[in-house]
Image (cartoon, rainbow, N blue to C red; front, side, top):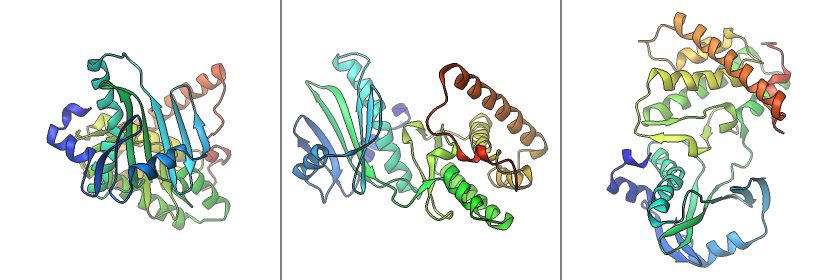
Length: 284
């Protein structure tokens, strides 16, 4: 929510050092200072590889960059557009907020608002394509398939836990921290994506921490036993929490979450991409 940010903080995150504001055809852009408006417009008009598309958004790849376009909704008055605009800016704010605090996220290139008369009709975000990286679910699947031993997997989980702790210390909370939203190329450095789910300057309550732990546990529990996952969760848990109580609750909520997801799949059909670790039966 933008109400946790002061006007000065919003301005600093919208156009931080090394970025500039510029008018472009049909809108306004905040972009890296070494890019000009003409180059940005050429990029957005260039043929792209569509990665995902819905009625309200489209994600495409152009070389080293991802272009995410979003349509606005919820009224066409200036007041309604202002509230919507602030919400749409949050991933851009979160990207700079996290980078400034040492949390790895895709490098930002530009954020564009299209519209007229103070009404924003659509936006475009351009940011780094994480080349040679994959989400941690697919990374771990290949790691195990290639014969990684318990020590190597433990090291991977320890590195991921440290990345989580860095995110927590930043003062931001990611509301969808499942494995599909964490990328890595080497199992040592991790990038957080889907920044629409990030809230800034919020405390890590036990409820928020539990939600994250359940999301991560659910990502890995098909392939890994608690012999590995217990130390992983412990590394992300303050000493004030009793793990003898905490871990059974993580498992209970994860089982409820999994049941609800599978019931939705039975009713509406499973998504195209499913965590590949589901194919592994706790062999480690």
